[in-house]
Image (cartoon, rainbow, N blue to C red):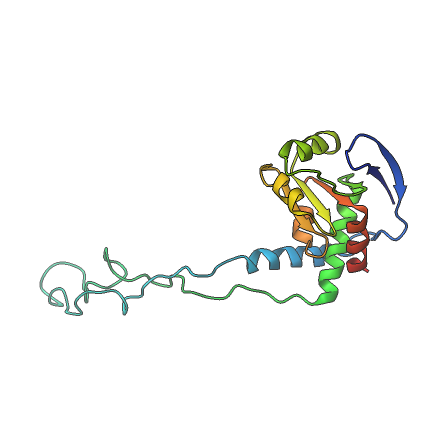
Length: 207
């Protein structure tokens, strides 16, 4: 598969053939990608929503009025869910939403995410992320030439402190190491710019 390879300043580009880039035919890997994305989203949930049942709210347990003779509906104490200030029926309680995904499924989902983004022309390569000083204008200049619009994911094998400082004031830019990126990160960005060493690292993970 061919990609555009930019120099460190983003000024010029050339085509580069990546022979071992994952290619999946048909719908292979789509169910795995969906499962992994849902798992990542579920694992991000805190699961700390909580309500009180009628046994936990404060209030008297005394019957509000006698059973018969008042002309009103029969009712017990004031902690019943139908009363204001009463308990909640079938409300949420703290729980663990996390899901376990095996390694083969994660790898297949990563392959499919890379293939989909490459098919859409959303992946570009850069020789290396070189930032001489921690200035936002340096990274903004590169992005304006390589990916002028959309949410951008910057991938590399490692980033210097100056590079991280230069990137943090750009709202549409996310910075992740290739060893940490997952399928959810890949599909949630419009453009992906990967350094050559970062591409080698992510292809090793996808094999």
